[in-house]
Image (tube, rainbow, N blue to C red; front, side, top):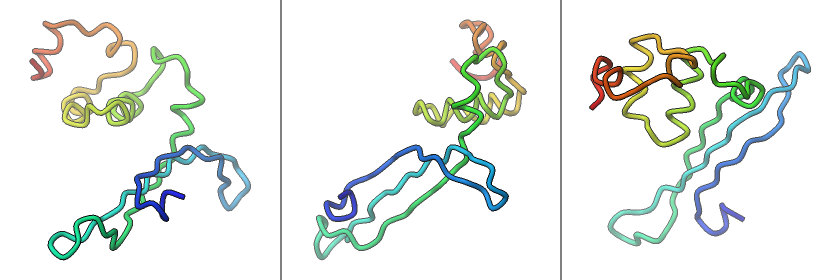
Length: 109
């Protein structure tokens, strides 16, 4: 339906690795539109997949590793803050205890 209507689609799917291990797959598909000739015409789609199993399974953010914090930031729409959090090795417990002064130390104001 998303392809037929030229719409963005983001879903989480249960998938399986070659060895049969289940994992949660975040699938994002975005339409690309023709620029000049017909802006409403979708010419291509770009699709991105990523394994988000540990985000779904790890419901307690105090136990998140820095990469999990970064993925949460990305998914929540705060992509611009991912770098400082990864560079400073901010884990879930630290993330939950952030305040204005700690954010400034990370270079975020």
